[in-house]
Image (cartoon, rainbow, N blue to C red; front, side):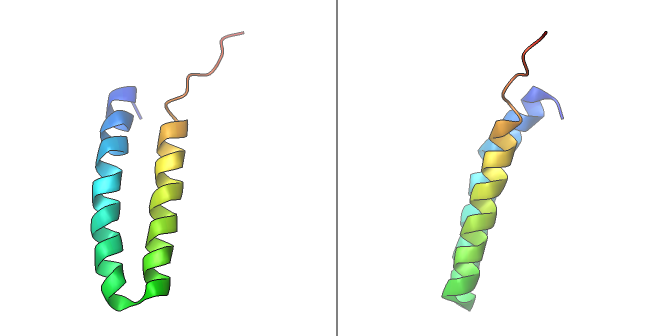
Length: 56
């Protein structure tokens, strides 16, 4: 994934996650918490991918 695409995903993921959390809240609190955890871990993974690797 290019850095530009990764930045767009990092911006869009919280928006999609917020919608998923909102919809999951209607089903039940445990589903809502699972959606929150999945969104947060996904965002961490995407942002972690933006960190450049050191050149040896």
